[in-house]
Amino acid sequence: MNAVEDCVASESDTASPGRSTPASPLGTAARPAEGRTGRSFEGGLLSRLITYLGDPALEFVLWTGESVRPARATEPVARICIGDRGAFYGLLIDPQVSFGESYSTGRIKVEGDLVSVLEAVYEAHPNSKRGFSVIRRGVEVIRRSRRRVNTLNGSQDNIHHHYDIGNKFYSLWLGKTMAYTCAYYPTPTALLDEAQVAKMDHVCRKMRLKPGESVVEAGCGWGSLAIHMAQHYGVKVRAFNISKEQVAFARERAQREGLGSSVEFVLDDYRNITGKYDAFVSVGMLEHVGVDNYPALGRVISQCLGNVGRGLIHSIGRNFPAHMHPWIEKRIFPGACPPALSEFAQIFEPWNLSVLDVENIRLHYARTLHHWMDLYEGASDKVAEMFDEKFVRMWRLYLAGSIAAFTTGTLQLFQVLFAPGQSNDVPWTRDYMYAH
Image 1 (cartoon, rainbow, N blue to C red):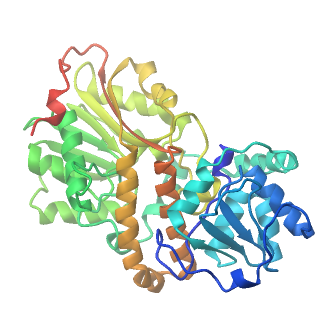
Image 2: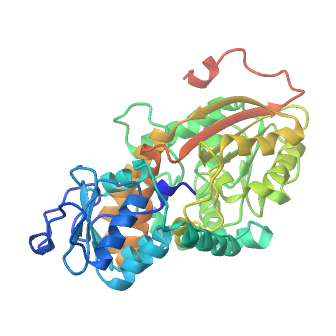
Image 3: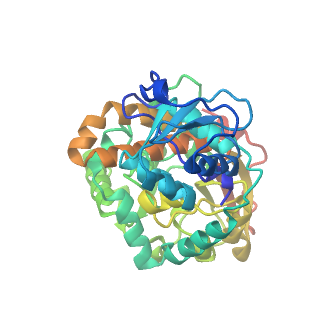
């Protein structure tokens, strides 16, 4: 894990994310952070932690009122208020997980612009790990032993943890399409629902769908893409998903749209897909597959397409292999692992699948997340009624951290178009992707 991801930050409890908040009364009592002398024992440790994190432009305030800033003369973009000694020592031992845990319970608060706080952390370049290396190695060993694997049973548990917490919850902030993947903004001012429809059209054009063709979808969410393909491109779709809540929602939605004979939603794992199809598509599922299972996914795709057809995989990714942020994996997305492009190859190479095109639309995901977060904040009272304040803060932190991860380039969003190696039915130019 890249050390610039070793801290997660969030907004204050008194203001919406992304907006500045007034200075806390704590600021008037805090001692000035001039130099590195005259610190308490905890203040000295905190100074070392800040150095370990790469001196992000943040001010840290201890429960005693002592304030510590980075050694470099940078005006802090926000203040991190550590409420007690236990939360502080948790940060020293495992800043990645402990920050999220303490923020969620209110033991750590953040004053300032949320996204700017996270960007400051992600953009900081650590220049020293002295004094933390032994602890960090021990913590990483424990994490590896606890990571959830994506076996058939393990995947079911992981997906249930995230997606089966209630369709009503997601309907509060995903927009009308209920699409829980990166949208595609034809213009910077496009609205969320408009951009989600544009994403579905972008995917369908890339796959050159024609009326009467058959499509298999692996991981269909609440069914928006499958229904869109059938409704607007005249194809027959079999869509697989292991989330009971999502499949029930999608089936009802298809019946309501009069598409029951064109779209079949199957409650089953992608590894159990059978049959031959003209196209294979997966949007937002690969993050949950796990790199160890990529050859198995490639085998399924190869069997589905044979020597003809085409496919598209849309997934969060990275510029280099790394594990998921451990707090996100623990609390939000167990078993998730966004791949690097080098890891994508393990899907295609064993089965002679040819990569035709790769597009990275990470800034579109940052904008999508901003829209989701605005809707989430507007519905935060309802979320608190459904769950509790800890849940509200936990998911707020997850959404905010995701925005910063995309704006700083920590995460990418890849769309990879491919076809069987034997197939010569490939476009001569890219014009087909953009024709309306």
